Amino acid sequence: SWQFPQGGIKLGETPVQAMYRELREEVGLLPSHVKILGRTRNWLRYEVPAQWLKRDWRGNYRGQKQIWFLLRLVGRECDVRLRASERPEFDAWRWNDYWIPLDSVIDFKREVYQHALTELARYLFRGQGRKPLPAEIASR
Image (cartoon, rainbow, N blue to C red; front, top):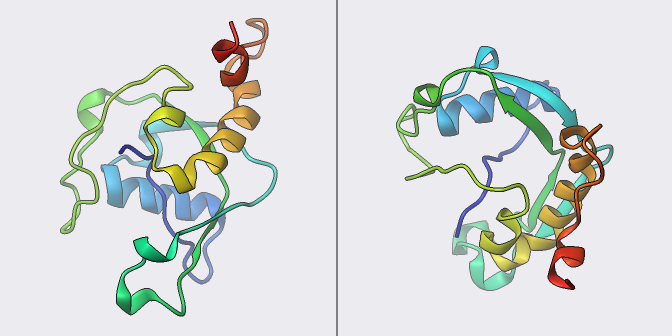
């Protein structure tokens, strides 16, 4: 399965600071490599099914609440460095059409992806007419 970079917010960090830190840790991008186009208004939540939790996580970890950001890469593709950290979290990356992640993300995150992508679409497709939602495409 494929997913977007994500992670927790450390004590004292804002969501924007955490996003930049996670982006650097997971894919090697710096703030100068991206431009923030928008973010979700509210926190989005998902829960991890018990069978997916590591034994030592059970009891504390249930899932995540997230603020999603829509970013534009203003740097170069070669700025993406998946081996930038000591413990890489991704082994590949690719460009996709906007709605494709809904088909390739793990099941328990799909609803959050649907909500986030639907909300963030207004920033990307503003002035270009309305971009059809996945359900509308499927019903054609």
